[in-house]
Length: 153
Image (cartoon, rainbow, N blue to C red; front, side, top):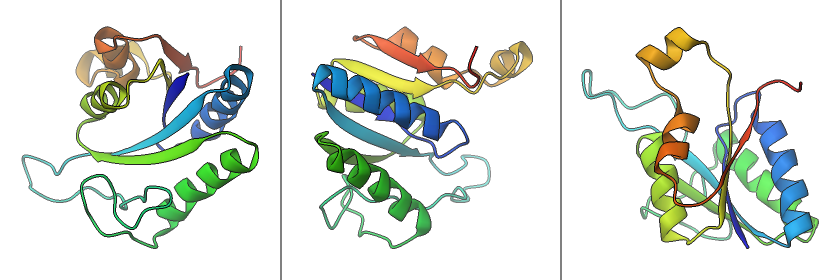
C-alpha cells in the first residue's frame, strides 16, 4: 500500500500528518510526503515566498536542485524522520507546479493507492473565485482521496 500525503505546513498540516501516521500504521503503508512549491507568478514573474524543501536521504530534490538548509526543509525532514522512527517507510518529494497538477502527477508517477490532504474549509466565494486544491484532486485522481477537514466535528 502506498499513501501520498500532501503537506503545506499550514496550521492543518499537523492533523494531516497525524491521520497519515494512523492510516500508514494500520495498513502497513509506504508514505510519500509531498510538498508543492507554487510556480512563479505569471503576471509579475516574481518567485513565490517559499523555501525549497529537501527530499529525505538525498542531496538534490526531484528536479535536481541542490538541497537547502532552510527551516522548512528541516521541518519536512523532521516529519519524515519521526514517521521512520515509528516504523513507517517514508520518502519525501518536492515538486514545483500548481498544487493539483503536482499531487496528481506524483500520485501517478509513484503508483500510489491513496492520496491524503487537508481542506482549509474556505467559504463558497473563495472556491468560486479561486477554486479548491482538494476539489481539483478529487476530480482528477484515479485512486481514493482522503480529505482531512480543518476542524474536528
